[in-house]
Image 1 (cartoon, rainbow, N blue to C red):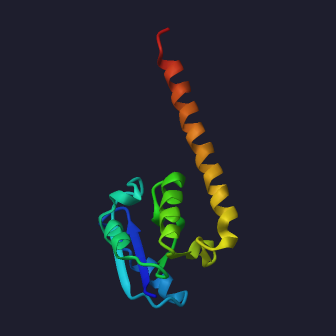
Image 2: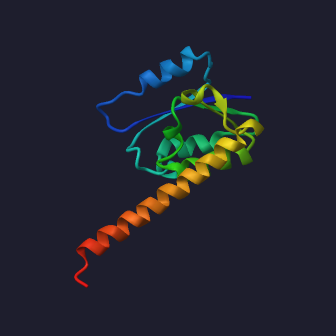
Image 3: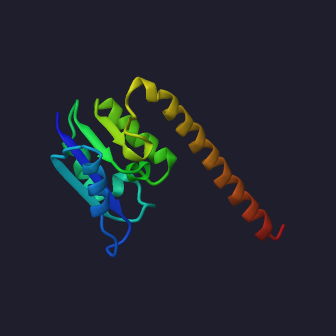
Amino acid sequence: MAVFGYRRVSTAEHTADNQRLEIERAGYTVEYWYADTVSGKARAAQRKQFSVLLGKLRARDMLVVSKLDRLGCDAPDVLATIKSLAELSVEVVVLQLGKLDLTSPASKLMLAVLEVLAAVAEMERDLNRGAHLSRTCAC
């Protein structure tokens, strides 16, 4: 089993060092570190180093991140990332959630909640688009 750490910051003016320290202080000995400097709006698959990392993970490896948003740009993207990692039998640890393994059986409820939140967010986006269109429409 190998332990991977992933860090992301939005701009070159920021540093991902604090995320590395947070993971190390939580007691994880990371063998392989990956970091991206990319907007949080970028989907997980569009993040260069994250894509490289995904290609290196094997069954029973562990991926540690400091916050849930490191796994994607929005709830559907995070959920898709977690599901793909679960299919690989990769343990996912998000420190922000109390070192919760998101691929464990106890986390199925959390994944279901994420799916509901993603659906609500999508509905709100659609409603907001419709409201915006109805205000600007010259009907």
